[in-house]
Image (cartoon, rainbow, N blue to C red):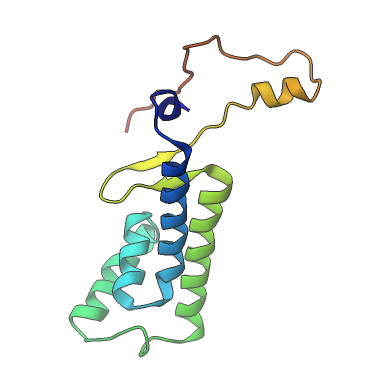
Length: 134
């Protein structure tokens, strides 16, 4: 909403979303793509999956075809659906060579249009946000 208010066209957001969806669907193309995808989305870090995939590719010259078993197929499938779910339901779109764009919809006017009472809407020109330390 902030970027829209600054004049960024809706088509730019839709193009970024289409790019993110297309990139998520390439997870099965190669071991390198699989590795890049889980790394960019910070997936599998608890299990050191990124390091494991790097070692398999670099030290053992493995590719996706040599690792095409039900276990790795399921990991790729779950990763892809998790990314697509984040895009669809949480409006999380990674920006190429940048940060994650997190969309937050202003739902107040939609609820008011449906006849709901006691809906809080921010005044014009105000932004609500939560500050957290990393």
